[in-house]
Image 1 (cartoon, protein in one colour):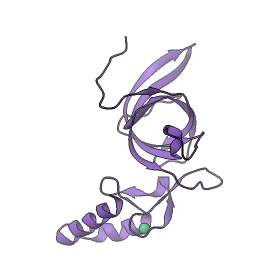
Image 2: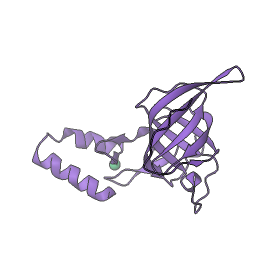
Image 3: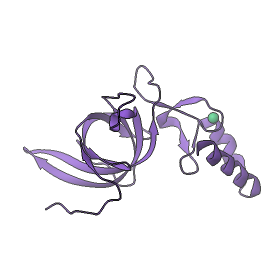
Image 4: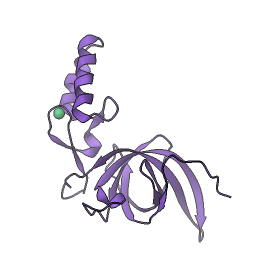
Length: 168
Ligand SMILES: [Zn+2]
């Protein structure tokens, strides 16, 4: 039997084709969603993903202006749970992921890897190359190099506050 957990937001059953990859990988796999809510989504995937892994999910039916999941081009989501599904003898997994970030952004032509903006310099960087420093703040490699040189203390706190302010 399926365990029913109370949820803060209602779930909508919705099957849509997606491509996904681990956040630091370029190896995309094909899968589909099974339902979603404001804060997360469930997918049926062909491979096991470790809980707490961050994945990049690209909607194949991206439709700007729509209200559902397809309103955004891509998501960064954190895997919360994964269960083995046995379907017609082939192994699939059901997984639930929490949405960390949403993006309307541009595709790079060959790999279809969405780009997101660096919160410090504003350059566009492939999603798998950006680094999250503070919650919801993404930095390109160059900015991260500068940022990581700031010693812990007052100045670093100010920079962090500035970065979070840029996002909120
Ligand atoms: Zn930057």
